[in-house]
Length: 626
Image (cartoon, rainbow, N blue to C red; front, side, top):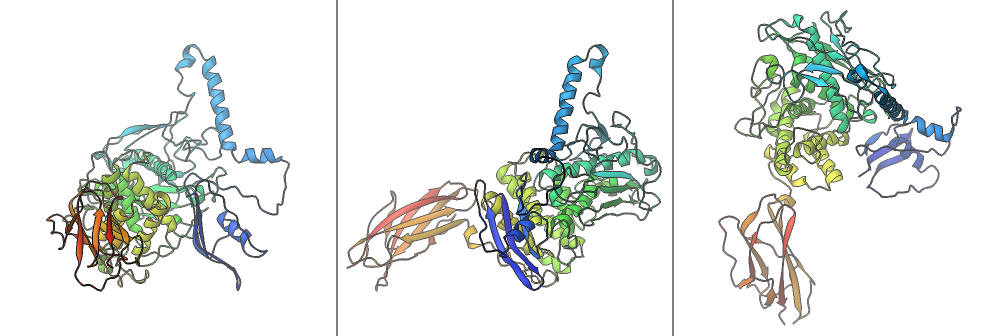
């Protein structure tokens, strides 16, 4: 899928131009909009281009895809030729290429001591606990060297003008400005932004025995590095400029610029907390971290990677739900905003040694707990239902917003590990084939697809749609099973998303997700007397596990004679015996009518070791009674 428009509606005054318009365009497909003048063709294109906003609906553009649009009427101004205008849209790439060519010339002509210089290429470094570490003591402090993504941050973390070269040697850049705000005036404390010098080497000592006030430089560097890392990671999952990410300069790639995050370490306005303020796209966000006083000395929340990632997650969910200019879509009582933030924190702090039954908490470093502690939630997260008992039924009485959100986290965590069991795990989230990568991608795509003021079934259904768009629904039953395990199954009803108390939990899955499904189809429904009818009996294995000792029974009308079938089929006048592993599956669909009441059964004992979505097809031939 390249482009998907779902439920687009637009009116101008009382005149309805578009109403519930939906379509999607696949790779290599061509589409045309045809209609009379005033039918809404240009309006739809302008909505897709984000020149105007739809009254309802959602436009989803596939990751790494961009749209070129030539309007019917152009107000052409300026001195550039068409070719020069086209080149200007990729100026940042041209500038980067020129810099590389200049560096090649420098290195080619260098000699003697010049060959030992380290400033011919970028070598900025940040001494901190990088992801997937949780915090000091639960992750090694390492120099994060030249870490900026060439795609998400093409000019490095200290650029703001889109021209090669850092604009600052302090903890200021295109994605974030990090500092302390001890006096809580929402302004950087004087001198609180460490200087990395001309080489951008940010290396400051850290001693956990000291009071946080003595560790502010290391604290701010950690916050700056982690916030930039989150920007770059989430960019690769589709949280880019057009989706409303946080950047001072959008480098001509869509969205509204001027909204880099202001990240405040050791804010003196409160204790034992943190927050993220998300304004509409184009206005700077603010992320504030306080001290936690559970230990002596206190610990800084901005040194806990689960807390920082959790807060960044609020910016992600607020900008994606309802679109980047509408950040008031997560105000209803059943919205699980805290859940997405907890989930993101778990995902990005899981290392190669993680297992599905591990217990994991949020803010465990800040509270002096091991990673398996409950942290700031009532219980840790785990796929082990004996450790984590959360289900959709708990939402009605859970605290708002943290208790409500934690239920969703448990569901998403189960889904992630089910996908990981199917596709494998890789702590390098660049591995798009891994199950953990797929899970995070589906969750982020679901944020873009879900409606404003979502309830739990809205969230689940958006993830299912995301899998349908991206993977043709290959993982739909796995996703259903994960949500059903915690009460958000096929029959679950969220009621009004504005009321968290009127939902009904259910633990079932759709009929098509039964472990084994049987369909029987006759070649002709009303055969002539004496004719032969072919039946196709199809057994579908909808799981990833092999199903063995499966007994399949198909009933045909009395007075008819079974004249043949697939190799190994047995014919008996009684139903097939029940298997200890799987009971018989019996269904007669579109069978020929017969006045007799005495059935005959065609039985096929079939051992299946087929993977998910594979089918066994068996044929039987029956001569109709005269």
